[in-house]
Length: 261
Image 1 (cartoon, helix red, strand yellow):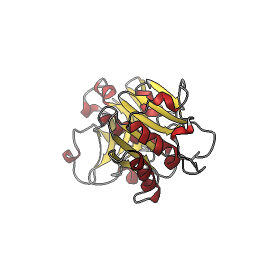
Image 2: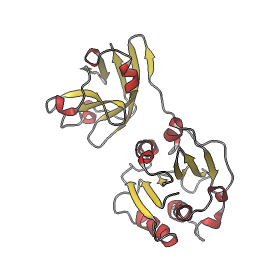
Image 3: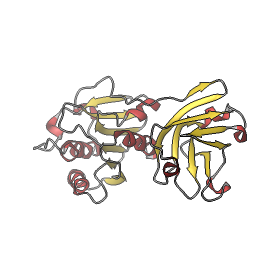
Image 4: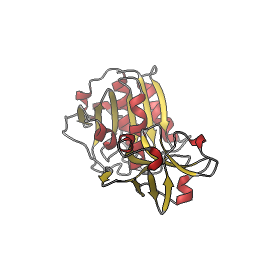
């Protein structure tokens, strides 16, 4: 493994909870490099946390350890997991946070964290991020074998990630997530669009608004225009140039999107 550990939480920027987790990890491995992916995941928003992990973590060097704490079930019987997915390592509660990653690439190994030898001596029922995940991450960064953390398990909890449906001259999909600019990122991949005809012939409908054709970049249209394009993640997006499609359409994750030609 590398000596990089990333942190993803819903604790908020400047949170003392984030600082406490960093203190634990640095106390175990002072040389570790800590990277904040985001602490602005909405409170208990497991779905968005799963999207964030899937969109960002695979870009890191092989062996990076990713700690994700969006955990509305903290202190309950939900499992705590280590997972190796691709060439990355993850620590997260088994509540679906890893499920979009696992949907794209089957985990090579999943281990339940049961060996309290690698936890802090006192474990709070409300802060497993500090008392379990942080010390385990610190030990992993020093070369601890994941198999020593507990028993191997066969699977993890998978959230419902609907796939777009291809019909007769039609694709039915949905908004998967919304970025901070208000762009609506759908679950419709560019490969489906490529097989559906020329971009200018497409008709995209979302929440009663229809957009004709897709463009190659935001700057092709004028400020305030509602438009569509394939974004950096490789999926169809609905956007307002220099504005927010989410506000204009009053949209949220799960909103239906149809493409016709």
